[in-house]
Image (cartoon, rainbow, N blue to C red; front, side, top):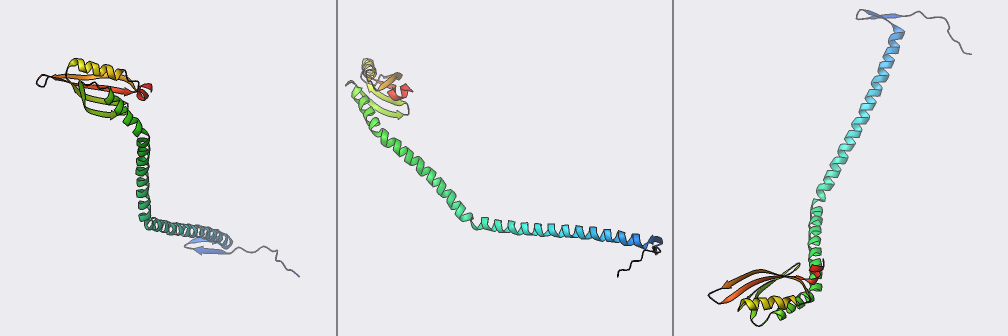
Length: 185
């Protein structure tokens, strides 16, 4: 059997600091305040543990980075060395394939020089050659120019400089030669 008291209760009033309050309202207010304080305390505790865990993870990751500093530097140096070696290998491949062309180019130029002129220097440039030489007369410089212009491997020939040396009775000349491959570009 269940008994229930359905009769109204008398409200009890409590006076705190000179303020009178109904005991039932005070009880409800305190339960709401306790619930809010409990919720805020739990939220703060969860955030505190999250921050603490993140700080621990950050310290762990920083220690891993510090421990791997030497291998990372070593890897960076190896990458630089690989880049340099690839550049050297590429330059070697180009030189290996162009060696015969360069030698035959020098031979063509040398064979085109008439007996009355001689070469003082030859410089290979990406687009051809620059030759400097000496001739006995200005006519020999012209013969050299004509002989070089008849060469099929040279696309363009230009006279850069001609200087007469009165003391030695010679003529110094500089000629720029463009190879057929450079002229075709």
